[in-house]
Every structure is written in structure tokens, then in C-alpha cells.
Image (cartoon, rainbow, N blue to C red; front, side):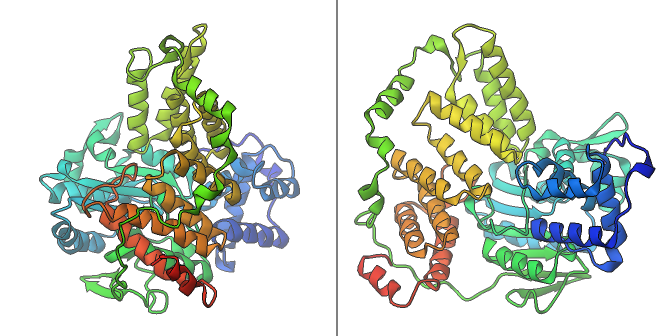
Length: 533
């Protein structure tokens, strides 16, 4: 932690038993973390450290602020950062990385040699050493690595650790494993007594904030679907038993058939991992999803979007003359009044910002885009393209700054009311804020703008399911399936970050089975009669 404490130690109150109980309960509710009696001192140190960096004079006022999810969001992040342990190192736990290098990764590579697509998730990535270690192993194993579409997602709840991960600059202590010392000269450059990861390796990993205790995955919106490998090591030991069970269940749903789960040495449990096949290697235990094959889903492609009752309830904005006039005028704006993407004034910078977002550096993208906005304000009559605002919305969303993300997306829509990706980003923002009804309406607008947009139908299905509206969810899911059925399995779904049609189709089939079980008795028969298979 880099907290600057301006008050004397004596001014930071000790935690009473009541304080321990209420802060413990708050962290359990927000992020699933449970501090037993043996870890009471650990919690006390974290709370006092976060409190020291606040402007409050007593713990009661500080606690009341934390209860407010909106106003206290920044202080809550600071508290979570203070109580979560983010120290790790490259190739930590050699036996597990030996098994990954010698067995698991080569098998994954052989299995996907034809499609050349791999998807890996480091859940609880801390400062990035784990996902970067995987990236390095893949470069060791794949001579043609640059010809593959490889997704390595690193997520964590500790925002400070994520910042360090994105910087990819490490001290010598991060290389204390033998394998790390051997490979350091090949993949790092020395800079000011630290070691900076080469850009081509950094680009292989994308980092984002994710709270594993929240029921928000698997989902396309946060790229947590159809994973081949999940590493979640020494994370669930901090969760309650109930939260751990829920997390493991969601991991199972996230993995493809034959996908792998790697947990810490202290985490194996016959009860929690009973749905997985246990795979033993030298001093390492892995878990593999090897379930019963999915039922065959009939293919009907005569009409791609049957039962699309959305058209019967079109939102008023699409039939509003003022909306259409405004939208038309936004597309016909004189080029001299905008900073076009291809111009020297803004195009190069926008492309650079887009690359920063693609490679998991939203803070760099944000800074570049804010610079474009600032430059445009210095020239009378000049304003950025709506795409600059959309990218700003995406950058702030990736940083977990939901209000700023919403503001920029709405500004983009004030410039161009047909900006599909602004609506789509708003869906993500609204969902994270718990505004599901608004998110559903926003996703409907996405579909109206492009009825063939697969991810729009898929996302709408998940939103309906969040509301318990499983009949509607299945209809939207069916629309997504029908659109996929006219495409080849190896095709990559647009805007998906490398998810193939086959992978998404499998995820849809899995969800259809699960959601049908949630329908009231007799509903499925009525839906079948309506050609929802």
C-alpha cells in the first residue's frame, strides 16, 4: 500500500469487538471475505490503514460512509485494497507450473491447433505475475504464438494491485523461483533497478476489476465465458464456505467441456470440487470439467429471428421524428466540426487509445482521450468524434468508474444517437450499478440498431435471467443461437475478444438447459409450441 498517513498513530483508533464484527460483516457482504478470530488482527490492521488515509475523525462516521455504495465507493475500494494480500511472484508454486508446462498447456494447444484460439483466466491475479507467467509459458511452447488468438484475462478486486499489474514493472524479489530467474533475461528489460516486461508479452494479458463474490459471471459483458483454463490460487481461502461453493459453481459454468481449474495447494476439497474430474500430477492436483454431454439442440434456420416479440413493442425513440432528424443531422455534420479518426489531429491518438483498451491499459487510454477532448476545446467550433466519447466511456467502465462511464456514453449519444457501442457500454455500466430494468431497455436499443448483433441478443438473455424472466431470456437466447447457426464454428464473434462461434454456441446450449429447469411446470411445452427449441 502507498498510503500517506498525515495523522499521528495515536489518532487512529483501535478496533473494538463491535468494530471487528461490523467491518467483518461488511466485507463479507461486499466481497465474500471472512476474517475468523485467528485473522482478527489482520482485519484490524487493514481497517486502521484505510481509515488513516481517510478524512474522518472517528470510525462510526467512516463506517457509515462505507455503507453508502455510491458516495463511499472510493473509500470501500481503499479498504478492500488494505485487507487483501496481493504479494506474489513469477511461476509461484513450481510443481503446478511444471504440470502446466509439461501436460496441461500442450494438451490445450494440441486440442485447439486448428482454430488457434485459447482462453485463460487468472481469477485473483494480484499484481499480474500469474497471468504474465502463463503468457511466457505460451511463448515458450508456441513458435507461432503471434498467429494465435489468445485471451489471458487477469481480474482482481484490489484496484491498486491491478494498477501495478498494468505497469508490469517488478523488483528482483518477484523472480525468486528458479524458472523465473532463467527466463528473466529473455522477457524483461532492466530499467532503474527494476525489470519491465516486454511489450509483446504485456499485450497478451488484459486486466480488469471483478468481484468474485458477485453473481456476474460467466458473462460476455466481462469476458468470462468459454474459458479453457482458470487459475484461482489462494483466493477462496479468504471466502466463507458458502461464497466459495458459489464461486466454484460459477467457475464450472465458465469452463468449456474439458476445461481446467487450478487452485492453491491449501484449497482442494472433495466436496467443493465434486463436479470436476480430479487430475493428479507430481505434487500438484488439478480439476477438469468433464461432465455429461449436452443434449442436442435442434437447428432451425429458416427464419433467423422467429418469436422476436421485440418488434411488437418498439421503443418510442425509434419512431420519434425528432430522434430520427437529430440522428440524421449528427451523421451529416460538417467534417470541419469534428476531429475525424483518420486525421493527424486526433486519429493517431484515438487509434493508440483503442490499442491501450484492447491490451488492458484503460488508464492510458483515458489519459490519451482526455487529451483529445482538451485539445478540441482549445479550437472554436471543434469537437471530438462521438467515438472518442464512446472510448472514454469504455475506459472508465474498465476502471470501474461507473458514473464517469455513463456520463461519457450519454455525451456520445448526444452527438450520435445511433452509436451502438455507446448503448452497449451503457448496458454494462447500468448492470454493474444494479439498474437491470434500465439495462434491459438499453440493450433493446442495441438490438433495434442492429438486429443481427449476436452479442446484443445474448446479453439481453442474461439480463432477463438476472430478473428471473426465464421465458424472455430463452427467447433472446434462441435468437442468438439462430444467428450463430448460419456461421462456421471457427469464426470469431465480432467484438467478442476472440470468442469463436462454436464456443458461444456451446455456452448458449448450456444456458438453455439450465434456464429451462427454472421455468414453471408447463411453460416449456408452450414455448416449444412457439418453436423455441
